[in-house]
Amino acid sequence: MAGLTVQNFVSAAVGIVVAIALIRGFMRAGTDRLGNLWVDLTRTVFRVLLPISFVFAIVLIGLGVVDSLSGGIAVTGVDGAQHTIALAPSPARRRSRNWHNGGGILNANSAHPFENPNAWTNIIEIFLLLVIPVSLTRTFGVMVADRSRATPSCP
Image 1 (tube, rainbow, N blue to C red):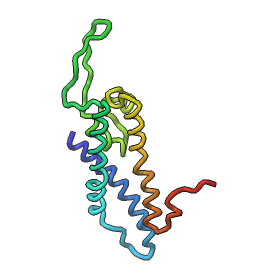
Image 2 (cartoon, rainbow, N blue to C red):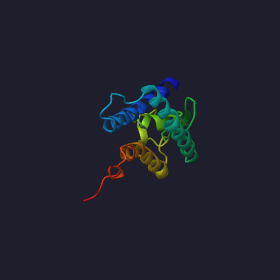
Image 3 (tube, rainbow, N blue to C red):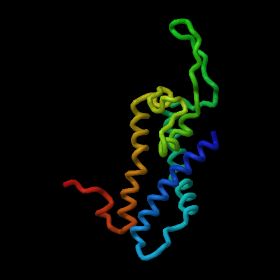
């Protein structure tokens, strides 16, 4: 679980770092210096991704998303058959995996009721899926010192 979580954070951070390097390429057309990958990667993981993940993992747990290292719960179905309902540490990994591939622990991804139990968790997850890409458009405008390019204009 730890190895996959590291991979989830690093792959998301690499995407953000590449976007920042592209912006620096627009800013610094007369130089070959686009910054240090490792500095940008470390800053992105520790200053952006980890704080967002920590805060919203707690929020999702509070809203009812299952967070357990238990193997599952044995239940008896309506037909009398025994079933095992899988449990997983979903909120702890949810934010990081949504940033890069959206794969889920419980196979149905956000459609599974343990990963997305109500409308509030769905709204929060959609917001968090969009917050970094939309923020990068704002970042572009701020970094090139032309805030009119930070937000798309409507005709």
